[in-house]
Length: 135
Image (tube, rainbow, N blue to C red):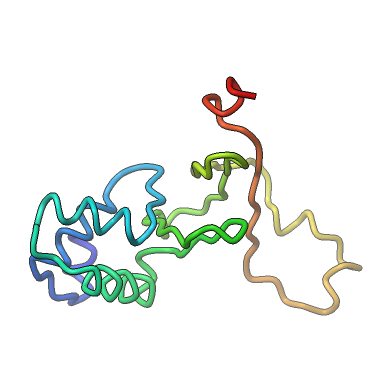
């Protein structure tokens, strides 16, 4: 919230609630999940306000949109720390992970086709402990 205030983002009650819902580790909620949690804190908050606020946070670079395998977009507030994602192929749970090494260095020069690389996204997939027990 402090970072948002310092950027001059007006913290209305609705925006504050959305920011509070997104506070924490391994947060990857859909817009509908964010809305449901926000309504618990501020019953009058509309779905449109949540969507608009998420759009603003994405534009500001404070939240990352995460899409995995055609599922609903999820919103990751961990936008300021380099990380990758670990996704359960069954239930869709997403966890932030921090692999070692430089993933940019893993692409050989011959595979870069003259591109100047600026970033990389890696998604690790598997089964979470709960889903693995069911299988």
